[in-house]
Length: 185
Image 1 (spheres, rainbow, N blue to C red):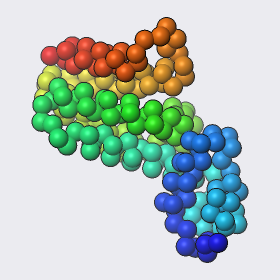
Image 2 (cartoon, rainbow, N blue to C red):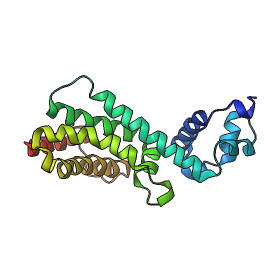
Image 3 (cartoon, rainbow, N blue to C red):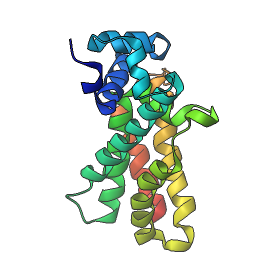
């Protein structure tokens, strides 16, 4: 059994993310998180004052991981159209791989749990700069919002099982992204 002080906040946050993905947000408690490390629940208060603080850390980690995933995905391309496509596809891949923590970070309306705006900015600015290469800086922000709405809306409909008419969702998403990019030109 690890000594409670030896368990780092990042380890606790990652395990909380895993538990949310595997068991659901409702099943995550400080006691279940502590049990996963073989430590007493009160020792978690050294890192998080309550469950809300833990969920804020989970959201921050989810936001950071999404930013990292998207930024890593574009490292190999210089073409702005390809970069936009790669970014939107990377965003979707991440969201589908992390549906519960993605939803927690990007769909909740509880002010104390909403993702810090710096993460949204770190995600948006590279895409906005790329979009600006195609449409100019004066309309880059509305164009960016269209792309973000496309990917987030598609992902949320996909995760909630709302695409009920069959078909290949990967192909549908690729087509939607291609259409969006053509519309920027």
